[in-house]
Amino acid sequence: MTKRERRRYIRHLLVSPLEFQVNDDPSIAEKTHTVDVSEGGLMFVARTPVEVGAMIKLKMPLYGKVFKINAKVVRASKNPDTGLFEVGVAFVTYSDAFKVKLIEQIYLIEEYRVLRSLQLGRDMSIQEASKEWIKRYSASKSR
Image (cartoon, rainbow, N blue to C red; front, side, top):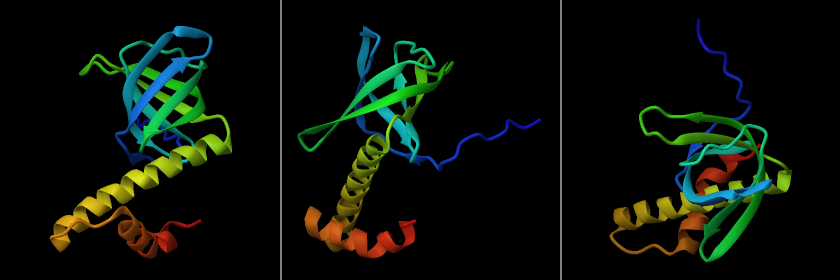
């Protein structure tokens, strides 16, 4: 019997620095990283177990700015291979989801910039990469 898929959104791999803190228990807090993101939430790894249903605050740094996101833990299980907890969270508001989508797009544009710089044999600016990225991918990604 196969496990029924319950996700509403497609996941995208994204490894990004992340800090989290459980709202009701400030002693549960650590620096870690994301594993993947979707329009509805994200997954990260933690050394400390986090209870399903807990409300948490996420901090995601990007270019000197820290994005603060509220989320609810919807899944938490220990990975037997790594010994780390895989924590899945749902965004609380559309604004929180938008912040993470923005971060994801900036990371993807930066990856694109590095690749294009190698292809061109010169350093491509983030502005150039952004313009190319939008021209190439915005029409196919819009909903």
